[in-house]
Image 1 (tube, one colour):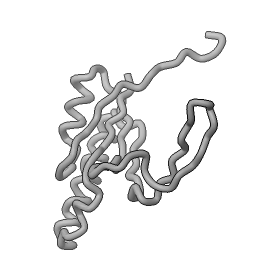
Image 2 (tube, rainbow, N blue to C red):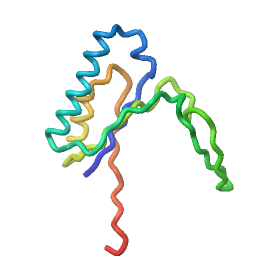
Image 3 (cartoon, helix red, strand yellow):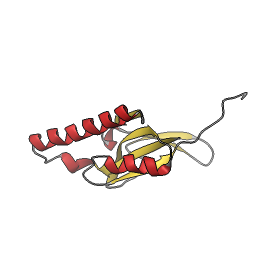
Image 4 (cartoon, rainbow, N blue to C red):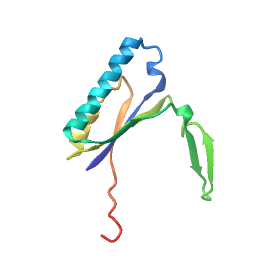
Length: 120
């Protein structure tokens, strides 16, 4: 089964980090990604640009779509990236989530819906 590991945390967390520490933190992320790849659990993963670069499409009660600049909600924590993993169980997906080298925030683990192919 596939699980989405959504990484949520403060965007400004790394703003005042010395370059050596930032480089060490990035190495932890690269090492984690390589561990996922080597295990065969890695399906996809990406970091996201800051929330200020987002554009949100809102859907009104009448179905009308409007766009607004910025993230979908005013919060101190934002979605910073994700991993899509293949795991045998929720417990296995949670073990991968616990290894994510985030400094703070949280990791939301959610099963991905499976839809049958048309005609099957």
